[in-house]
Image (cartoon, rainbow, N blue to C red; front, side, top):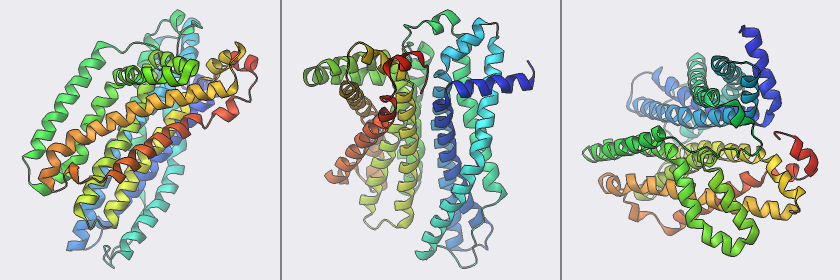
Length: 441
């Protein structure tokens, strides 16, 4: 298959489901923005004469850059994989008319590359603005030596491109591998539930391996000095979050089982539909559970550090907002993508008599399950890290006030509900018969 033919298939696939492309594009822009800003700070500090303030600024920039790269590859890979999975039927149609598995994978790789190239200049521009705000804030706090000037140049651009390329291609490769292995007849079946495939044993074993690895990292960090242990907390958190991402389908099923009695008792028919939907779409929901757990875990860990230090400076506050904001935007973007793919499902409900408010009630009930899974997993990850390491670093988990717990959980629940319901107004304006025919929003 020629490059032009592959590009044509990728273009047709994007036109078939523009919401999936838009979701991937937005997530890549978020990633490029934070990577550009972090690398710009690190490069600016590295180019200045050596001094104590210069070394501190350079160390901070490098630490932020590394952690942002890890987070970006982790969450963007999942978003890209989700976008490919949402076009499962289109891939099956191509397979049915003779396209080979390698052609599907090449099509996805081409689309992922073009999406990353389109997102790069937008994210780079926004990252330059973010770096200026960050740099000026540091300067006002007296943390930037006079000889240091902000430089947002080629290194930031190359770093952003590298992250976008790796994360998009990794996620696309995972999604395309699944799509190319699925039998066309199974993917084309109208009764097939989106995200209803059972997770494989390999995924389950991998989640246990990463969980054990995260436990080993926690033990190793506990043997370090207080300063070194504090610097290892974000890395250990990410190890637990990788395990959560792999175990997402089982976490979703557990949350559904826990919430089922309450939803059925209070929600009636809407609650029953929500329980059935969450069970059937457990694998799809894992894409939303992971970023919600990410923002929750980092928020709890950083709140513990801020309250434990007592005199947290501007850098700590900005870092907390940066990580939480990035993960929150990706989580919201993923939830919007998951809602948009259900136009046909909601339209079918309306054709059999469901009212608009009942559809909204179903989404609200499902949001409760998603919030329970994501927030619960994030809190568990934060506790698994901060309970053994908090005492070592002088920031015990017991020092976190109740208002911080309440603010974190309430913000997470509000994020899930707002993002999940945001597309509903436009989707419910579509006539049910038209929505049944359409394949995407």
